[in-house]
Image 1 (tube, rainbow, N blue to C red):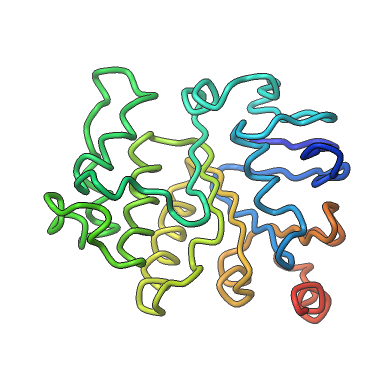
Image 2 (cartoon, rainbow, N blue to C red; image 1 turned 90 degrees about the vertical axis):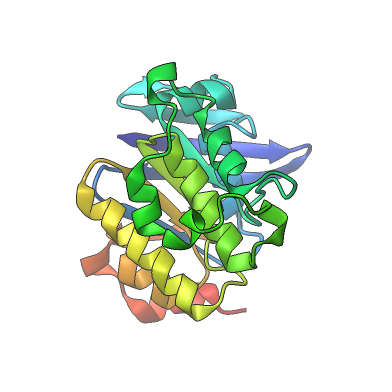
Length: 231
């Protein structure tokens, strides 16, 4: 469904991505791993259109989306859960969820019931401001907001960062449920190896802006991957 092919990305004179190729397919989780500062977030920003690429291509269903603006990619079915969550702290939970209506036709502007099945705590907090939620609850809200857009590709940037273990398990169960539905391709950037290993169908390890290891879960050599994650 999603193909990133030989992508280069620069911030001014600094090159953040070097000939990076990644793919993601419906019903599968592609985990992108690596140390801090190796280009993982830059890859997601390139996929969703927040940062222009200077070489290579990004395509969805065989059609290039590399020149589309972020809102145009959202309408094509890309959703992004950024690092740090970036929910709207002064809006209520309900209002935060409704910001996901933007790329949808009017007839689809409602919050699917399955979102509250995945994250039941949100149903009890619809009237609370986003900034009053705990970090873990805000992370669930950020994922739920992305799911409101009915994405075909869901990109998550380190959803376990700073989150308590019980909510990490809830997030893992939600990702597994979405995978098993078979309708969505999931790209997961993650530093927590055990979380990534348990969810990954395919994996990519980055270093210094380039892909240095890649394969499916069956071919993963844990020692090799871990050695690329340790400082």
